[in-house]
Image (tube, rainbow, N blue to C red; front, side, top):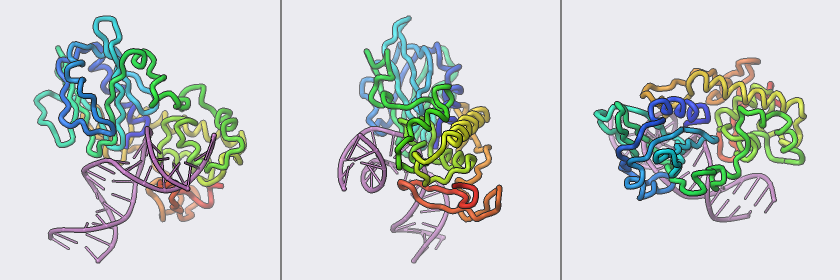
Length: 281
DNA sequence: AAAGATGCCTGTAAGC
DNA sequence: TGCTTACAGGCATCTT
């Protein structure tokens, strides 16, 4: 399931090949994503040039220009199982290849593949294209984890008087974006914090450790070119194997890599939560 | 207001 | 073995 590092890796993978390219054709073979893919895209996209590919949280934003004027922005989310990749136009379309962009003067076409269809592809026009951060999906998002705005002091200040478990707190997109279930489990282990501990009862010092671990883990994953358990495919078509060591996620019942205590699994808000009862408090 | 539950969806794994 | 069921997860949206 694409977490933030996979989305960033996708952005870096596709950007060099599509920035500056003009769309020759767009085809939606199946519009039934999280929200229906807008009907007008087939008519609207050809002739527009992908000016830039940016990212906010796990959303990819493709700015579409006509000459030097921004016409609209494609907002794409990979959901649980989505991928954007480049391939030769000769490549047979696979099951769940839902969207296809063809370009002028390019050896590649771009395909959106999404078996579970939790992803989306929306079109922002007018004011929303100019200022995508005002879009309802982006307006309330917290800071990017890899920016200076996000640090232990931010977490500490926001968490005062909150009874919410720390795991839910760091997975809240209004607190910080890009911390999915796998990374939440991992960074809490690395920080020695018990996942059910109330966010309001964690010290500033521990929040600084936690914020640093979030930055370190996400940065390392991006540096490795993205990680996955199952569904991610790099934009060049090669699988992106999960190379980071998972200390707790998926290891319930096995022994802690630090102290050999058996790792415990509980469910928090329906999500698999694994921790070391010895190392995490 | 805030926190928890729900629904969307299909590939995979576990169970009978 | 083959069929059925449970589970995984991001996240908007509904419910309490």
